[in-house]
Length: 242
Ligand SMILES: [Zn+2]
Ligand SMILES: [Zn+2]
Image (cartoon, rainbow, N blue to C red; front, side, top):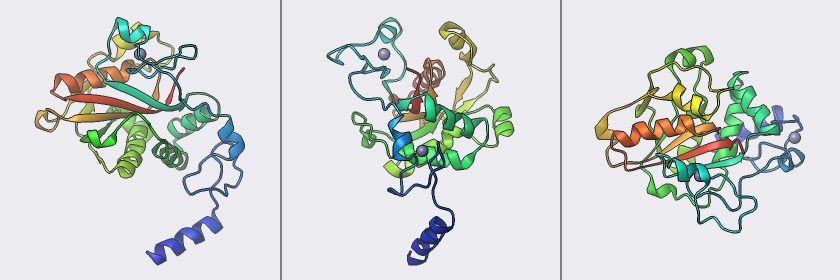
């Protein structure tokens, strides 16, 4: 343990942690990943929101009503929560992680997510964390699943098992970028297949992904798990399109 501490200190002295956005040397807490200036540019998702999909209501005095989307088509997940808005320094870092295959940025983002307090989500109520899977072809191209890296950090922080065997992506879909909500739903329909029923039936599960855009992908994942017998599926993402 003492040797580990010494190695960490030596590593920090030789390779000090840098801000994910501007590369300034960080001098704060061990879980700090953005410098104070860059951190101030981030929009944290707080305040009144739809209790199901988590979209914020900037002009509404209360959160005891569903948003128009959830009223029209109630999602399969019980609630979706995200830490921050998908813009600016966060958007840049997530893109570098996914498309630039920058694992160092990925693990810093995972630290950032696991340090976030989701005030209305009780992790003790859940049995396992399920990362949104990539198709095997995408996984081979990218070399890693970004959702699994985020899920592992959350699992460690909240003492929950991460089980990627519960959901597989069986259909190689077109990228969802540029598609509207209906096209996204059509594109993603039937894209996932659930793992062993006995490991899913009656379980409360948390799905983890990097970004919530329209919710079409995550809703299809939740539908697959609920249809296989999951009792409840909640959703956590690092960022959300607002
Ligand atoms: Zn910075
Ligand atoms: Zn909603």
